[in-house]
Amino acid sequence: MDSKTDSELLDGGRKLPLVEDFYTIQGEGFHAGKPAYFIRLGGCDVGCRWCDAKYTWNPRLYPPTDVRTVIDRATACPAQAIVITGGEPLLYPLGVLTETLHGKGLEIFLETSGTHPFSGYFDWVCLSPKGQAPPPDGGNFLPKRQQPPLDEAFGKAHELKVIVGDEADFEWAERNAARVGAGCILYLQPEWSVAERMMPAIVEYAKAHPKWNISIQTHKYMHIP
Image 1 (tube, rainbow, N blue to C red):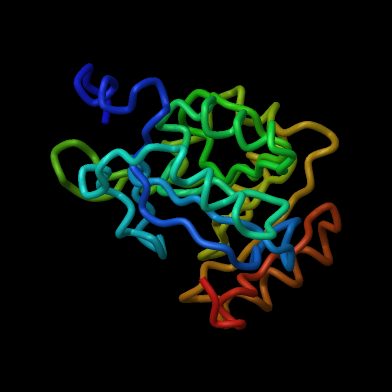
Image 2 (cartoon, rainbow, N blue to C red):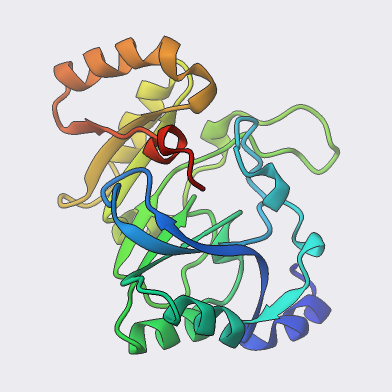
């Protein structure tokens, strides 16, 4: 959604292409194990081949939803934290949604690839540098190293979570780690479909480079969304 018409449909962020929203347990990263209300937005122009939410990529499948509807549902449950995810949520103006939720005393967590400018209020930013962006002509996927986060994303990240699908990703992880702030917590997370194969290498890499922590997708073991 990048045309003037689409922008008008979103009404300055008062409406957003909602895929789903639900109360669950955060399964990965720094806040793993924490109950949280997830707000998943549609639309992503990164297109990782291993993405487990490919159904979110096309925003036109998800008509703009009044954010007041989502806010009402989120505040009707016991959640103390909100996770805004996607897709890529920074495709959209998030000020109305995040500032309203923050004003109601909720913590706001963002999951982003960092490839678009920031908008909105966030207590915690999980930066997960992605890639594999499909070119406009529909040809082969571009290498992930050609789709880095914007500079501002590194400065805003509280947590850097790098998905590891092969050993070349350790170098990609280090390149991104060199750009975040000193207080940013570093995570290596195995890509789910190769987790069993890659975990030994990730464990050994973290032991040899102890600035890194390991994240796993615990929600998949708990069989929850």
